[in-house]
Image (cartoon, rainbow, N blue to C red):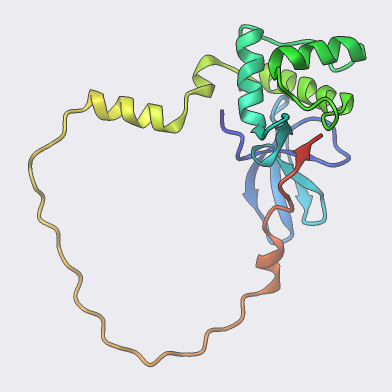
Length: 187
């Protein structure tokens, strides 16, 4: 699952995919409707890739929690985020048995269920989406036999030494263009 470009925007329902960067913000796409819009740099954005959930001994990345949920629910949608608190806690125990009941609130579990269902509806939840990148590259390496032929490589001509010119300061707009996300913890 490619979570590194999936974001949540404070004050906006749903999940979005980062499409491209502008001087004054970003172009995003709703993961369900595929509708593209632009947002400004002042929007509070959280990358799902940076979110983790607390257990009693460590923090588990959201990707791994989604994988547990997917396996428990046969890669289909799960309970509604509007379910009762007891049902949501039971769902969480099934998905992450050692979650920290003191630091993971029902509101966090609601968000987990809601985001999972959004990603499921958008087609992001499949058995293939949880295959790790290393596994796929290893499989490809096994399928293709290594070539023993050596190719000649051309070496670039040595560059003439130039006197070091002072570098101009980077424009402040490029510094603002990075996504405003901090490593968020659910709980």
